[in-house]
Image (cartoon, rainbow, N blue to C red):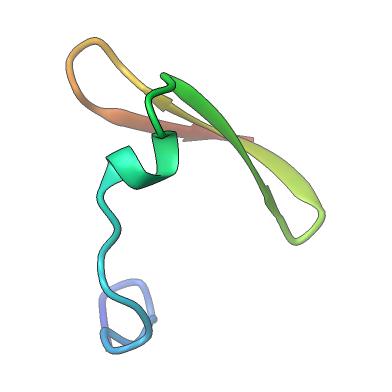
Length: 49
């Protein structure tokens, strides 16, 4: 179990590049809500609803 309540064996870590695919921002639909994942100039990730 991880600190977030998930099981470590659920899925391997994904590189952020595989989610962003060359873009700075991607939209993610999750449980009927739209989220935006952004890469900053400093190399950090921001997830907003």
